[in-house]
Length: 202
Image 1 (cartoon, rainbow, N blue to C red):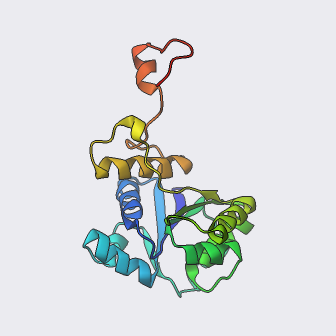
Image 2: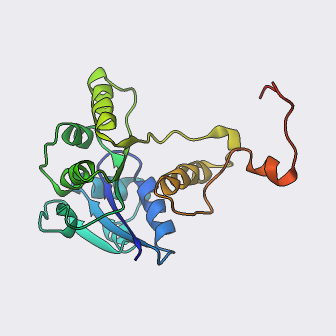
């Protein structure tokens, strides 16, 4: 049975992360994606990626309207391997933190928490207010993984695309999905059997 993952896109900046995640998972028969795009998310997709939300939906196995509480992912009886909100707006973060289920995205996240499934939230805002930080703490205490899109520069990315792919690789690895985008620190040194002397600085 393929791995079932719900992916929700909200109106925060960073739709490219979800888009690339879907591009990668759509290559595999071992991953089944259930997509929800908020109305604001569709606007951001158009603004940032220059494409319509329908083009993103085509990459998913299944897609639902954010107000469709009859969707399979609105019930805990429909078992998922995990759910992810990427990017996650501060409004959605607040809704999840306080269990205010006014749309399918927050409902899906709430189910993941109550069923003890993996839930990954990619908040995209800076700087952060004390209230927003408290909301991140609340979802973390409830069992969610908070994954801000912070690029890794020690792999020396050549462009923005590589920086995005590094984060997408991390998103995939959290769900135990093998990917060519995953970077392991020290893997190149293991391959060459070369190691830095103890106490080396970088």
